[in-house]
Length: 237
Image (cartoon, rainbow, N blue to C red):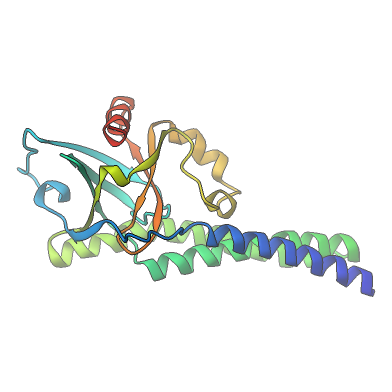
């Protein structure tokens, strides 16, 4: 290719990869107070048979999206007094970050291959684009499917999940509906965000500490509109 063609491809690569990098870095804003206590889940939070909430506890069952709070699959939310706890399979931070970077950066290289094919008028760079698109989608799908089962091994081995307990005063930006993808997540999951939005009518999304120094997004699909309404009201009280 000529110099101008390489220059165009280079500029597109810089813009695409740079924007994706910026978007991913936005996903984990810091929490200077390092709020949120990570601890073993109680029998009620774990969902054991026979564990019943007391008069001061309100328990909700839901299904967590794989957002920055890092819970995956079924979760139980318990609101008691001035605290809210979330318990269920949780993805370790290092694995989650690797998963996000893999699918995000591979997706960012897709426009590079398309522009390369156009300026060179050559179909072969489309294979480059298609390969990275496939890598992004497959890594997303594999991770989304593996994380719940991977997290369940903690329950099988130790008899409890990892729960996080957060003061309700630290919960903000509570929303019901399709606002689950925030802080750059919407860029990472761009190819399938619209489809998930259609399913997220009862998703309760909020910002809260993750117990590890970040102030992140949690998104929990409730099993009924009534539960979504009740939980969102408690989190805003």
